[in-house]
Amino acid sequence: MSLPEKGSKEWAELVAAYQPSTREWRDECAEKFGYKTRDSFQTSMSKLGVHLEKSAVGAMPSNEPPEPPVVNLPPVKLKKYTPINKGRMGDPETMGLGLFDWHTCLITPTYNTEIQDTRIDKLFKSVMHIATLHRNLYPVNDLEILIGGDMTHGENPFQGAKVGAVLCGAMDQVILHALPKLSTLILSLKENFTSVKVRCVRGNHGKYSKQAPSTSNWDLMLYALLKEKLARYGIEVDISDTFYKMVDIQGHRFFLVHLDQFKATQGVPWFSMVKGIQSWYVTYGGFDYVIGGHFHRDDFFRINSRCKALISGPLVTDDEFTQEIVKTSSIPCQWVFGVHKDNGLTWSYSLVVDNTYFPRQLAQKATIV
Image (cartoon, rainbow, N blue to C red; front, side):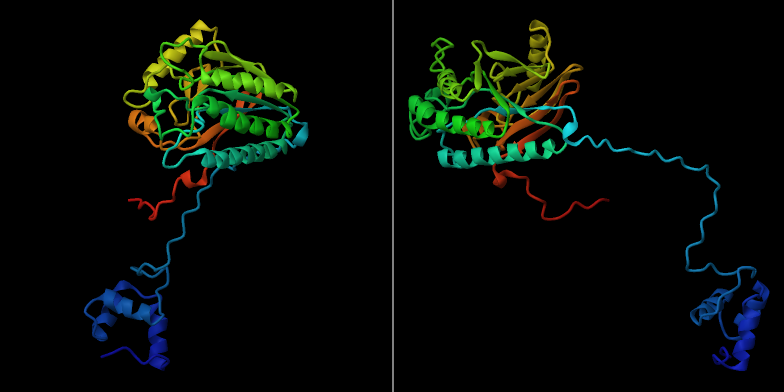
């Protein structure tokens, strides 16, 4: 015997009796209408749109999720945030710009003087973009440019300056290429800042030879010419006569150094570098920040509870030193950062100056298991 026809009098009577029914009654109906079990009978009724009342004994669970139990939790007291709308009236900050490892006139598969020009142009635009963003919050009128060496590649054959690997000799690298590029960048930045100061230390590629005096350095020649050229524009160029320069920015001490004192034989020598900087920290009366380059890769890490280090990337890419010794691929980038009189380093950006070196998005998203 099958179920009554839907809409008939018998169907209405069945529905009225089914909804508040007991388990025993549904057992009888299952047998009466030819179902093997009570569950199969109830399933058939549900498909026809007839459901048991909640009070019915043994009612089948609904397909709808059960309502969560009501838990009386204590009221939440939300924290109210009041924004500080200082705008341009906030404390002024000084912008710092690190220039490291340009290796002007070095030729690699992805670097030459024309590519260098486009990267310097990108650097200028990026620095001004960051300055504009932060000027919406507080004054950023002063610029400290920290030049850390290896601005030309030099002509030492033991440092990769072989015929065909460099465009020209060291004198032309300095006078015809590095000096115009560097002075143009600095003077362009001067147009957009109230004051600009330049601090310089030498790098290792400026050395003429291992036997030559430390003052025989192409970086120092470049800086001397730069100082003479920028003096007429009121820009101070401070050249260190040692391997480092202690720079005061808003009362915070920056230890400017090239970092070639640490030899990269099996990659970046992190352990010896941290240990050596700790020794410098004690020897030179402490400092708040170290900024260096040399290893052609950027990084930002803590030295101790008082000191952090910024390691700059280069402008050059695909050079033998990075690939063979450091064992990585250079990303062309330079640090720009802000310094507050009380808070020290407040923000920093490692500005990538060639869009072709931005990290690529993976073709497929990782699957979370």
